[in-house]
Amino acid sequence: MLVLILDNKYYLMHTSSRENTVLSKLLKRKSDSDSIKVSLIIQTASVTLAVVGGDTVFIKQLPCANNDFCTAIRQLVLDSDVELAQAQCQIVLGHGLFQLAQLDKPNVPENEIAQALLWGAKDLVAIASDNILLDYFEYLSNNPNGSKINVVACDQAVVKPVTDLLLELAIDIKGISIVDIVLSQLHKEEAPKVVVFHLPGINVVVAIIKQGQLCFSRNVKGYDNLHQMSYDDFQAGMLNNLGLEIQRCIDFSVGQLKLEPVKGVALVVQSLDGEHMVSALQELFDIEVEMLETSFDPAFDRYPLSALALAEMEYLG
Image (cartoon, rainbow, N blue to C red):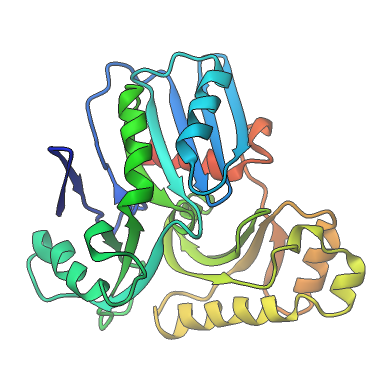
């Protein structure tokens, strides 16, 4: 457990290797009411607020620049026209707002792991050492010799203004997670599956997920416009490199993690031509490729990360 002292308040952050959060239960306080649930998706250029409870379903995204997330959050709270005091909130940090590094798992007691990792992470992340907020998680694996641990680091100068604002608004922060981790809510079946996830404004994420737990993930660059690709692009082989990345994840899953064979590839992409995208990728694999059918409320069709954040909060209880 890592203890951070900010403005004379103690913030305890710890992530179990079997849980699906990263910066889990940061600023956790008892809530007087759990009727209103809130998700806050913070990306480098936007903030998305979702509010659900009773007959209320509010989702809106606002742009922001220069890490001025608080101005956008204040406006979104006003626009929601919902009393959010004591509402439970799950925050998800988008790519560019956290850094991942892989280190050997320290041979220390569980309650000393985070502190031990902090020293090793300082040389691997581009964040001033005094500003590092750090936690860790492990991939689900059947490899008894696995000794690596995934370190997640974010900048206190970015996160603390947001958490301070939510405390000012009396919003109960249940946890802080990252994009790669919340994707684990997309697949709860026992057989591992590849999930390819993309939204405008973020990198493509290729993840191996089993029983709601992340086994492996990789960010794939060069496909910022994946949602805009058409039949002609697919025919020209534009998905070949993505297919290679998917295959590498499958090979890693079986070879290194010692998991059962992957049973399929599921796409979560807001594509203009999803049918032909599936067909083009299917030609590269002998396992089924499909667009993933989610159980989200239709209001979340454009905002799947918001739905996943709420699902993660519900999963953690």
